[in-house]
Image 1 (cartoon, rainbow, N blue to C red):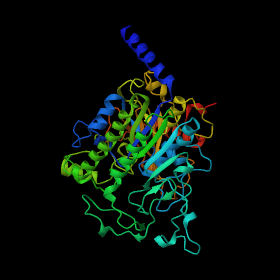
Image 2: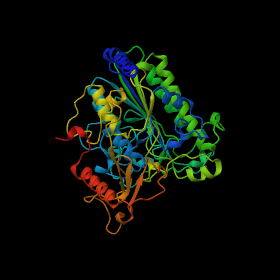
Image 3: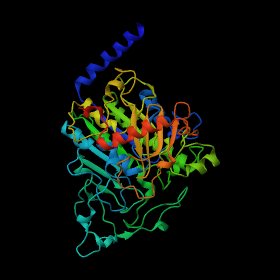
Image 4: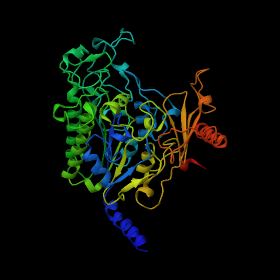
Length: 490
């Protein structure tokens, strides 16, 4: 009885504040950050993440939260549309690549802007632009010399054409052009080609930067600090404004190149990568502090997550520093094992979301339907096809999240399908497109029971053929029907 009264009191306490004004929404999105890098997820972590740990304590920390893919562009696409990436594509957007979105596709920013939000994206975009609009006549399409483009022109197809009012970033830290973009124009025109010799020595690994146009004096070490300051400035600019805002802040870190600022050297016990994670945590802390300084902490839903698991350097890091970036999971970036896509996931909204740890299955695609419910936006049938509304669960109105199944994929030749605690790995939908003849991996299907084997060490496919068959059927159904969202079941 006492529990019931406390629960009702919590729900009543949420109603007045929500009725006053639509909440701000901030998404803090790390790049290549493992589940075990976050201190709140891993008691043995060698990396201090005090700001994110504090955020986790104030909100709901999901232990079973997932990106759509084990690589970058697909996960971002899925999160911003509520549609599984594998319905449309599998790979990343390459240098000077075209936009990932479908014509007139509803995005999260579109939706929120329709509800009166100011919308901003500050950081890594990596979802394509129509760079061809800048190409000078007569230059070959495969050439990416800085003199091939008229940099004074507007760059169409980017964030401003996807529902964002404002953008600032460099698209991708290790892809050209190495220059800042504000809204849909270059801040300064590239006037030379990439020359890593002009940069300060890298602190771990390789630069991994693709050749292409660069602004003279470009300093990649200034990337994260600049984006952090721009995000802080944006939040501060919202002070005393009645209009709610949506800030999408996708960080370039701790993705390679691993370049923590000097002031963070030695802040972790996991080498330069660990220091870079700590700097990313500090960047999140500064944005959260800015929210507090304008009095909007209690009126803001903050989401923290990452696009995929850690890069393969994590194996050497485990040996050298005894830090497990994917701890306790199997797999890394690109993998369809849990470590490739089970990522740090926190949702906080003081007074509205009951703090705690959730073991409910959650996908980043679910943010779209959740935000739609939160803002009373009616999603059309051709949008957010793989998004579940988690708002009732976040508000404490249900004991378990609405999602029990999901499909994960990185490459066209291998999928993983989840149903409850069971997961089938290396399956292929019967109607899958893009599978090269002779490359099918169906014969190598693996089955795991995650509740008893979170590290995916014991393949149970041979012992449970009926379970394999059922999961294969579920995969085929979700794939062929074109949606998984319960709101689309007629």
